[in-house]
Image (cartoon, rainbow, N blue to C red; front, side, top):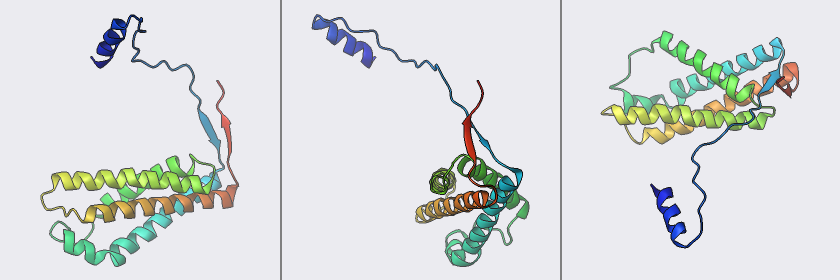
Length: 177
């Protein structure tokens, strides 16, 4: 509607307005592949998982234990349900490795992508809980988001450094057309 109004106003001035275009035509897509040895990939995944597990268990079990107990004690189980935790770690480490570790060439880029992924993942979790759970404390939202950013960035960095230590810098090339 706005484009049509603008076109009419231009036409009143005596100039012919070009028809507005609202579509995009994709003419070329570049796909990059990463060549990586199995030992380098395994080292990256293991380093990512170990870093994430150690840091997250230290955060949840020691550093912020009282914080979570006071804020979410009425929502917490007496013991963690480990099958769900294992599924989360398997899924999240896989995404960190695929997106942040293997998708970049430099450790700093892996850390930046990890931070971005942590921001998206933990913000989604926190804002969803805040929106649907009656007693979710607002003050814990920025703390958890900051933790997710730091945890994911450091885990991705550790994975990239392990990949480089074992297999060197991966060669990037365009996929055959």
